[in-house]
Image (tube, rainbow, N blue to C red; front, side):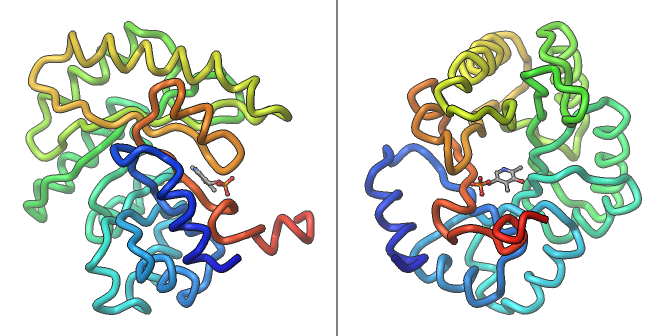
Length: 228
Ligand SMILES: *Cc1c(COP(=O)(O)O)cnc(C)c1O
């Protein structure tokens, strides 16, 4: 099946309120173009450099979609990131939020951000510890920053063999999300970004309203096929 067919089929299958972020790492300009023509609204990038290159290559097409940073961001890349991205889904510390806010102020751009939660408490994963108090404190801190708008929570969830095993982690993230929505002042918390190609159906059942899809739409990444 083509990228367009994959996109349209999944778009049909999932509820309308669920946003799809197209995870674009390692994809070509042609692949991204095809999915934009098919109606994609949000492109997710893991690396600033790759995003910059794609954005330039796409020209006018790039402006038809929103760009979300879904990978870890280094402080020295924030300036470039702020120019390209509409949203950074990977805020995981007050320090990082403050730096991003200062840089956004300099270019007078309001930046949408999500807090990334390391819901499985994995050593190797980015994100805030899944401790409600810590997350709320970070959210309250962001709410005070003039150039950032906290709009969501994002989680990768642990990599598990059977997607069903992700369910409890998704459920836990949803609980945190609901509690935050009630408690954080001045917030506009709307999106719960969780679920990837192998787990998006379960994530949606557990309350995700944004899923991030790569292989389900574009096919296997070459690097995965080579096992690199
Ligand atoms: C690559 C990636 C995805 C999508 O992964 P697939 O399994 O290809 O759907 C989602 N989120 C993040 C942060 C990613 O890096």
